[in-house]
Length: 280
Image 1 (cartoon, rainbow, N blue to C red):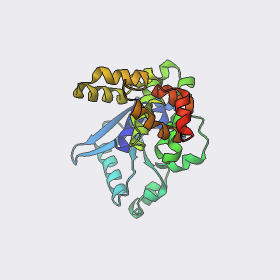
Image 2 (spheres, rainbow, N blue to C red):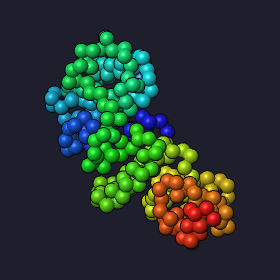
Image 3 (tube, one colour):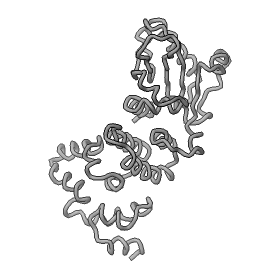
Image 4 (cartoon, one colour):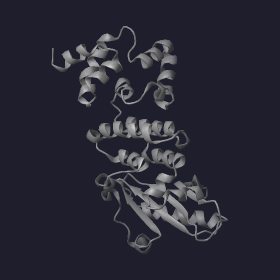
């Protein structure tokens, strides 16, 4: 999954995260609807646009682009898209541009034509790596931070974030939807994690509602093993796959998952996991 797609899903489902990134009150999200806008004349598509729900001139339109790849012509394209869209909209509101970078190194140095805009309050550049050094009291910003964390930090941070979502979010705050996005980010960052490693981080009920579970179920249906796979997810391991379960133990332990959690996830006895941990 492309990074800009992940951000599109985050901003669409949780627009308050966008306003946290640009250091505005999260209540601002109530005044906007989020969309992806196509400038049809040149087949340009802006990653995300926050459109005001009112026509007050001082309520700006926010044009957001997520840029994780080096692109010397980025600012040329970015501002062209914005001004073309402004020329075609009936809205008379002011506007702001927001660019989300993983770090400053990705940003192009071809800025001479646009330096007045870039140095003004009209354009904000967000560097996600700078979030690593800021304690995240917000679940939304912690989710965004997860995208740029190293693989070594991502797993531990994911476990902590999942616990926070379970404990702190009320049903009306869409915790299940956020858990699904966290699971998507984890799979995107760590594609070599196998199913059981992911399962240890989520509860069974949570897994059943994620795209991850739906993909597994569809795969099983195609292979004619639907019943067996469902049993595997619910019980931690398919009947008769003890050997593969034992092979998975060292990787799970290396992720920092406890012996008891590994045993529960794989339906092994704790003494079996301890024996493997001790190399016997």
